[in-house]
Amino acid sequence: MSTRIAFLKGHGTENDFVIVPDPENAIDLPPAAVAALCDRRAGIGGDGLLHVVRSAAHPEAKELAAEAEWFMDYRNSDGSIAEMCGNGVRVFARYLQRAGHVAEGDIAVATRGGVKTVHLAKDGDVTVGMGRARLPEGDVTVSVGERSWPARNVNMGNPHAVAFVDDLADAGDLLSPPPFSPATAYPDGVNVEFVIDRGPRHVAMRVHERGSGETRSCGTGACAVAVATARRDGAEPAVTGTPATYTVDVPGGRLVITERPDGEIEMTGPAVIVAEGEIDAEWLAGVVG
Ligand SMILES: N[C@@H](CCC[C@H](N)C(=O)O)C(=O)O
Image (tube, rainbow, N blue to C red; front, side, top):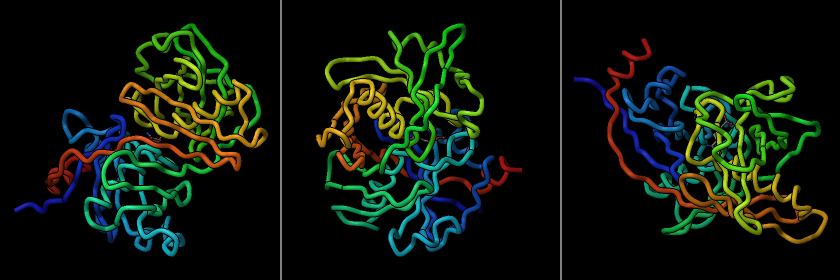
């Protein structure tokens, strides 16, 4: 009889994740295993995978264990590692609540982008403190086919290029990563957001995620978009002393993002667990080879 591995499936604004609870870090998840699990036809399907591990049991998070009991070992659907996932961390917290590992209120989650505070109500939306944005200097351009746009370089722990376009359809089918220049701007690749205005402090975006392709939402991307739009609008909370709140529509829903005068960014949106089941460990071992 084959061993079975528990999993859950969840999403935040339709940015969907395979969740693998593994408190003691006992499950081997090489990139090929992650890619197989995230495969929408031959696997479970997801934009990424949330490996749920106690910080003390993970070499990358051990030193954060005193601050945060749980580590979000996030992987993109191609198996690559990313520093942070804003929708993922809200879904991760929702899972911890459902599993009885945490109660309502504020909880700390360790990520490769540092410890994040997530506010969990019993039901409803989940808010996460995303930290501060960094805005590296220098002009960046992104392209789709023959068209190019200037983009704002925003780092939310992970890299983003934010381009304002006339129409979200201008981004085309986004079946491959939009090329960018200069090549030195993003040595580890980049998430690219295409943005249009919808109204005062209200925008809509599409995103091509590094390691996952076009997704229906990206939390770090929505924060990057909010910050880039605020700067374009001349809103700089650190200078004005007034928080700036932007509504960001994504294909899978809506996120609300506030940048405070101290630079800290909060993002609020839904986080839902939709299913749970078991992975056949023999199948997984077979696909990894
Ligand atoms: N969907 C995520 C971002 C996931 C990581 C990204 N693809 C990267 O490689 O940086 C989010 O909600 O932030």
